Amino acid sequence: MSMSGYIYLAANVMLSLLGALAMKWRAESHSPTAEHTGRIAYLVAMMLDPWVILSLALAALAMLAWMSALERVELSRAFAFTALIYVLVPVCSWLIFRERITALQMLGVVIIAVGVVVAEVGRAREGTTVQQPPQDSTTAPS
Image (cartoon, rainbow, N blue to C red):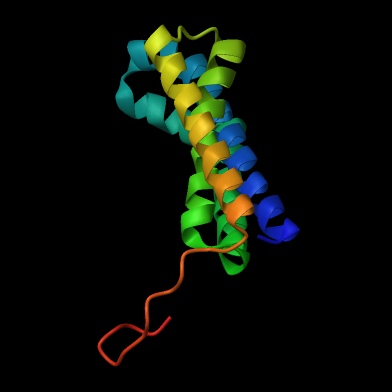
């Protein structure tokens, strides 16, 4: 994988993480309004919140980074890399929001992190990728 592929994948992961954290932060800050004035008022307040708008913009930028990464990286490799979101979100939620993480959740986070490392090390060690299946007239063009 090219260095630019890694950069775009890292951007996708970080932008997704930042967007999720910003959305959670604002959802918690608007929560009392939802209890007092109803669900519609809560949703309107959320949609007008500048931080929520920023988190939506971050999600859009993450998608652009994803599309750019897919130009340079195999889908199977890129998708495995995005699993880091499932590692970073719980850890950051614990650090920032003081959310409780159970031992089993932490075990899951560790398993995912190890899986990403194993997948990357395995590909780097092999130096090659799985061979493409032969194309015939009945398969879709690539």
